[in-house]
Length: 119
Image (cartoon, rainbow, N blue to C red; front, side, top):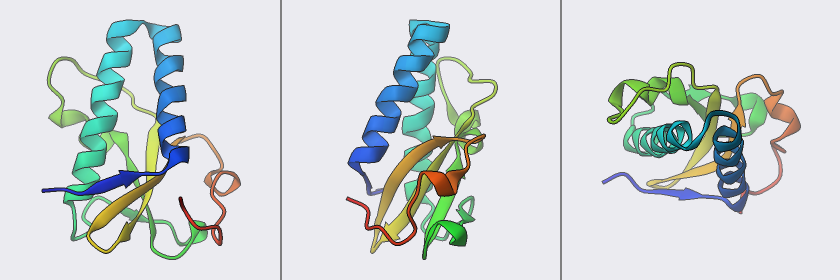
């Protein structure tokens, strides 16, 4: 079973993303994106061998990203055609810690402090 933990910052990111999606595209689109985020988190956590995770040394030791697009083929109940977010994560033993969920157009280094611990 894939084990993961979301930081408070990641939880806040998800809330903001889903609220924006709901306001911009409606309830059904929000539900599809919510499902995609959940699927992506499970997929990233299940890949203990690192397949699909992209090393992000500029964001800190052991930090990886997982683009939501990698998981869109596994959705049921509707497609998300162009997902635009990354999970920013690292391992803490067997647990995948999701530190942030950020838009792929962002300068990620402005939102992740490499030396700051993740809550």
